[in-house]
Amino acid sequence: MQPDHELDITGQTCPMTFVRTKLALEKMASGQVLRVVLRGDEPKRNVPLAVLDHGHHVLALDALDGGRWALLVEVR
Image 1: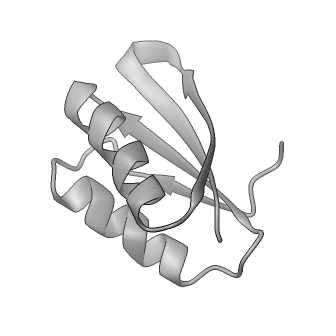
Image 2: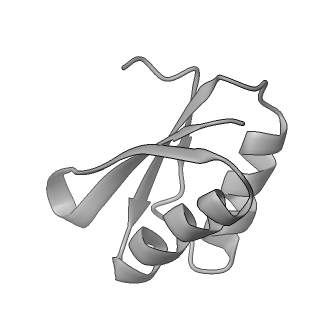
């Protein structure tokens, strides 16, 4: 799936990982997809849960190289 926007938060720590993700999602239209690249166990756990809590849909969470993850989120 080709995302509409991408966000790299690998250099951020919680809670800024979700703050940056939330700000990006707020600028997007319903139905668009955001790809978020994150690193670490805490963001891997917390960002998808927070996205769901804000009413969006998690499409995938896939492992990348170097301990990074790609999270695909559909804006609702």
